[in-house]
Each structure stands twice: as C-alpha cells, then as structure tokens.
Image (cartoon, rainbow, N blue to C red):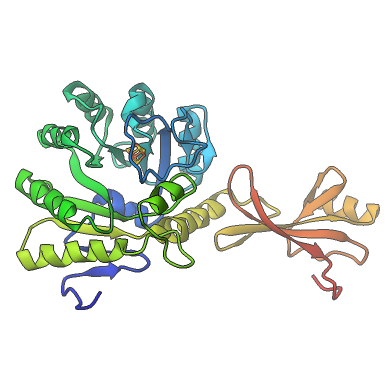
Length: 351
Ligand code: SF4
C-alpha cells in the first residue's frame, strides 16, 4: 500500500481490512463464533482457483468445523461445544444438496432460535426462486454470492427481492482489477451493499493450477503474491469514486491464525475434561505409568482415570518418583488431535 486510505479499517496484512461496514456474518466470524458447516463437496462449477482439498472436492462429504458428521444432531453438538452463535454454510455448492442444507438451517434455528445467524455461500448456478424461498423460510439470514457468470447476477437480482442480507464474495485475483471493478459497479447499480474479497490462496487442491497460470505464493505463506494489493487498489478506487459499497478484504492467514484459534479457545473452555489443563487454544494432560499403589491412589482420589496400561491425570497433579510417560498437548477437537508429547519426566528429571 503506497498511500494510506483514510477510511480504511482493520489491518490488511493479518486480520483483514475494509471500507464501509462488515457483513453481520463476518463480525461473528471474527470472534470465532461461527461454526463452518461444509454440506457437500459436490459443485457444478469448475473454478481454476478452487481451494478444496482432493478429499473434499467433488465428494459428497459432510463436515462441521473440522469433524466429519453424519447428521444435523452432530452439527448442533459441534456448534454447542464450539460456543458458536451462528453458522456459515459452505461447500462445494450447498444448493447441490438442498435438502441437507435446509435440514441443517431448520435444525439450527429450531435449536437456538432466530438470533442464531446463518449465512450461505453459492455461485447461484443452481438457485431459483423456489429454492431461494425455501432457504429463506427455513431461516437463512445472509446469502453470499460468488460471482462466476450471468447465473450469479440472476441469483443476485432474485435475492434482492427477499428479506435476506446479500453480499458478493470473490477471490481477489492479481491482474483482474478491471473485472473486480466491473463487479463492484454492477453490484452498486443493483443495490448490493457488501463485497468480500478473499485473498487468493494456494492449497493442495489448486497449487498446480495456480502455478501454471503464473501466480506465486508469498514466501512462507499460502497467500498469492499481489492478491492483497489488488484488493487494496479496489478499496482505494471505491473511496476515490465515492461508490457506496462496503469492501472487505479477508486475508488467507486469517482463517487459520485467528478464526481457528479463537474457535479452539472457546472449544477448550467448553469441553475441558477434569484431567485437562487449558492452555490458550490447546489442552494438556499427563499420561503416565507409575508404581501400582500410587496409580490406585490417584484413581481412588478421582485425580485421574485409567487408560489401558496408563493413568491419565492433570498436569498439576504431583507425581511420585518412578512415574514415566508424557505430557500431551492437543487441539480440543473430538477426538482430541494430539500435537506433541513431551516425555515425563524431562531429561533433567523435572516435569
Ligand atoms: S464454486 Fe467454490 S467450490 Fe465450486 S468450484 Fe468454484 S471455488 Fe470450488
């Protein structure tokens, strides 16, 4: 960014920056209070920049946050333990499995009530008036259209007739400033107030496709070179031209570094087991083998539980000499995703 934009809010490099307002769904997302419901990997579009992993792309899989789920009850349970106040429904194209999508929206609204905020991403290719009405009567609050063609504009024009918050969400592709400006102008003329520009992101699923087209990742990052500059240029132009549209740039690191971390912190507090110690976005516990009489004492005192040949106990429990095992650190997912194990006792003999 050479010249600062006076009305720019946030931080372009890390948490995201914007001019105007944020979509309600983005505000909750920033607090880590959105559960991501991946309804299906099926999608009729063929975007060359599609970031889906080969394990999800084109496959009819169902996830809530990072856990594969089988039912809407699983989605609700994941939302509860994550302390969410809303959900973002994504894919693939959620409209490709409309019945499942409607079931999820209805179930979440029934469980939490109308204040639970639900937004949904689609290109609109499969959307029509009837499906839109079904989504809105199920309780959809916010629709984000990824513009990929005329069908997206048709969906936008249709959605503008309904009481649903409407936004456009597209990747900020370096070298496509003209296309992005055209999207902004058309959105403005139609009356769309919000546009999200996501940083173009390298993933396992699109690396070759992006690389072959000349895009390059920034050193040590998954973000594409020039993507942020392109979004900032769009914001600068919107301000200079006095275009009354809010533009929000969402950096690639944001999802991993902030949203994920915040969600894990909330999850850790809500799902902490008696023998776990919460440490920011992770939980820790001791898994050790000790002299039998000591193990019995720990279990009888409800200070630990048996796990096969080990005893699991809280890191603050004072162990006797002769106990060996490890201090485990994990993300508070279901099941726990172990990140590392530090031997107990340490080489120095101290935990
Ligand atoms: S619309 Fe989304 S899920 Fe479908 S191909 Fe494009 S980027 Fe991938």
